[in-house]
Image (spheres, one colour):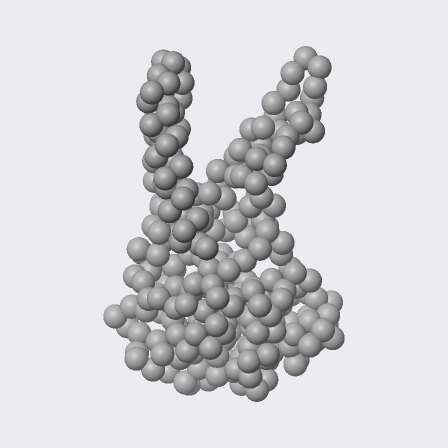
Amino acid sequence: MTLIGVGLLGGSLALAARDRGLAGHITGFGRNAETLRRAQDRGVVDDWSVDIKEAVKDADLVVLCSPVSTFLPRLEEMKAALKPGCHVTDVGSVKGGLVRQMEERMPEGVAFVGGHPIAGSELSGLDAAFKELYEGARCIVTPTENTSAAAGSKVIELWTRLGMDVICMDPFEHDRVLGAVSHLPHVVAYALMNAVADVKTPNYNNVLEFSGGGLRDITRIASADPVMWRDIALTNRDQIVLLINEFEGALAELKGLIERGDGEGLTAAFSRSNENRMKLAGINE
């Protein structure tokens, strides 16, 4: 197995695969030799290379664990070295057209099957990796009409044996669903954090010092890696813009109720939110 990127997701995948005996040999690829050395010293990978062709040449399975914006460039760099029968998958949060582009660019005898383990942390990097990250979480696999039964089974088996609940979904539907439950909340958290931080009064330039648990809870994910989320936002741009429009509509509705002093309407809107939050809590318990 070769991992393209050994940060939180790649490092955790390596640790879990080793713990469960899913790979006889794990190779890491990255641009930072010092990080790769630390990964080897920690037992995350068996060996590593900053030469992507060298890293993938013997791999039966290659997992792209780098930012989604790097997937196509990395494929162009490594595809001549991929051996026939190799399977390529990923941990990216965006599928849609990217899956089609990856499939079209695969060399003869090499299959790509998109994967998205829905697991993570507000922390990032190799030092945040831990073997239990994926256990008990859900993973979406996005086969298409071009996916062979063997390739689909290989990727589904990987995530299942890591202890994940695997479901299959159309790549474009994935982007609408994950745009709603993951990408939009991150955009909202980033925007809310900046909006509140910019609030000033005659006596206080930093109102954050008065915040309680509520602000910390709702903006926790604003601590996530800005570069990774920049790439996700731009790659799933169409769906995220649509969802922002829908969210602006929901916010405008509440704003109108408040402006009009419509207590009954506001109570009804908040009560509906309470009910939906209870449903979410029930799903995630």
